Amino acid sequence: MRAKAVTTARRYLWVPRAWQVDVHYLLEGLEGLSLVRTLESRLGLMEVMLSPGQEAAIDEALEKLLALYPEIKKCAPPKGLVAGQP
Image (cartoon, rainbow, N blue to C red):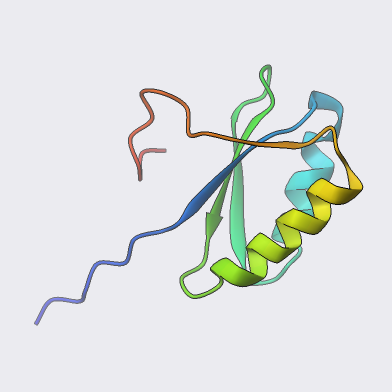
């Protein structure tokens, strides 16, 4: 019997280069909620991959982060990015 495939929800952020490491560690410090990767450091594009069932919790954390740091912005997925590709 095959296991059901799980789709990972993703959020994309534009983060000033000087803050990328801080945001990365802050979000991954929320144990079990998400994984974070930098897609393009020069452009400040980061991807937050949400753990299944944790969408509400990470969205709440992101809203608080964006309220505290208005320089960080949500953005659309980059064109040409295929979900699940590294």
